[in-house]
Length: 175
Image (tube, rainbow, N blue to C red; front, side, top):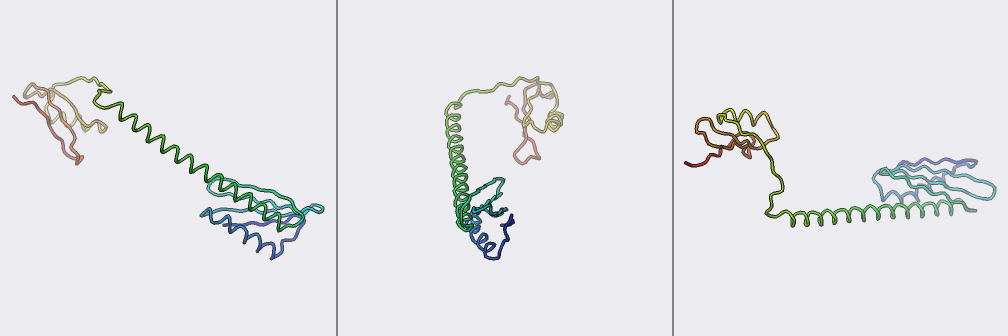
């Protein structure tokens, strides 16, 4: 975690620096990478600590005042840890609900569509040779098959792409 500590009208001693870094370890366990901006200042008898943490596109911030700087830092850490837990729980709940809804929609969708024709496509059948049908199918890479009238037999045939993606199959009626 990258930590930046700023003191306004206050000299940041090694003791305060170490204390802040030690307390931020509680936050560090929640993220792989995070940045912490800590601003400490004194105004009259109040010691103010402001901690802002940016991690995973989220921003967590706490500002507290106390007569003791260390107590103010502790309160900030508690507040931010609560914010992080709340956000994490909220995201987990959303993900869980989204996956349950998707499963329910999928089940309903499958139950509705069994053994029904749900789409009808119309197209023109041209009299061409099977070789020309292959060329026509190659010209339309999104199509998996092509129905045509075989010039040689005068019957409706279907040319289709095989699973290997390189070869084609020809379906023609008997007799």
